[in-house]
Length: 165
Image 1 (cartoon, rainbow, N blue to C red):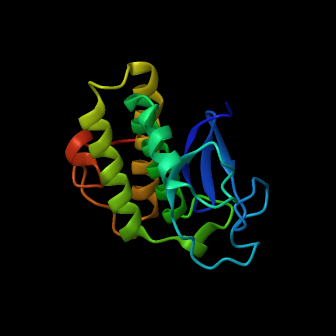
Image 2: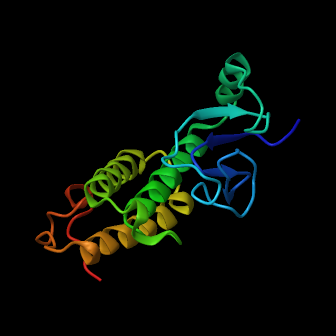
């Protein structure tokens, strides 16, 4: 059996615990979706042993996802939320091209809610680095904002409390 992993086919995927960038063609590589000529990435979730560039077999994906532990799904979703938030905050090599603070706020808030709700379900081994990443995103949001939110009013601070550098 090949590696099973939850894929976010939008230019990024988490494969066997490694974060890999995908070209718009869906092949692993160093080029970005922008370099491959894509405008806005289309997101498709899937679970399969099949490489992303082959047609999806949804019956196989449903069976495969049933075999994945809930903790792995929660962590993978959290990593994907973090990645999307980083892009919307302009923290990628493309910089401000995809920067959208309104969208970043929603993603950071959703990440904080997921980590708050899932705290009892995932071990501190998984939760600690995710919380650190969340705090970094919250601080980056505050720094990127022209008019920063009051302490305790920023994205996700409803769940984490006020975040200070």
